[in-house]
Length: 221
Image 1 (cartoon, rainbow, N blue to C red):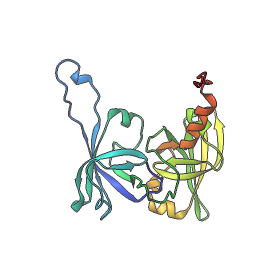
Image 2 (tube, rainbow, N blue to C red):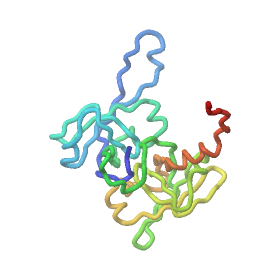
Image 3 (cartoon, rainbow, N blue to C red):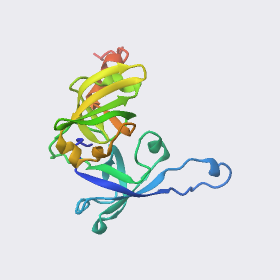
Image 4 (cartoon, rainbow, N blue to C red):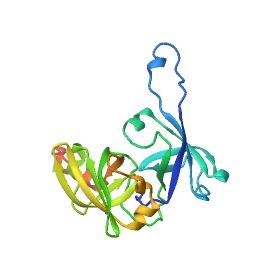
């Protein structure tokens, strides 16, 4: 689990195709994932071990190789994960967050590190001392978005300022304070950028409670 509070900005340094272990017919047409090498801030990996979870732009990944002395680590990303996320298969900056400890402060909101959909930035401009970020979310996620509710954008816990349902999805408006822009990879966004979105976990449970068929189970005497 995560909180959506970014603890460092890293950089994807190299991306390589994962080699196939299949043999025989069909191997050439199979789809494989990527081995991604990343650079982290100095000292960021001092308490990280192989097998630990780190969220990359909001997507939970497992550390498969580690060189803490040189501030680098590697993750393997499946083809399925690459198909459902954005920004994890090419060099560039990424938001980093280590998995939550039980005694840590929940500074943002409960984040699973599972991307629910990919949105598209429609506007990202400075307005006064803040920044106006607008994102077109997929239509399927629209029902989970609410005024003053939480949303995770590329791993960052943010508050929805307004929502507008449009024919091709739901546009959310978010106000970013300078600290967020300066200390996360969101500063690299521009109109047209694709971003990873995760809806509020509580909204997911509320929908299930409202739409699940009634139980016909009878308690035994």
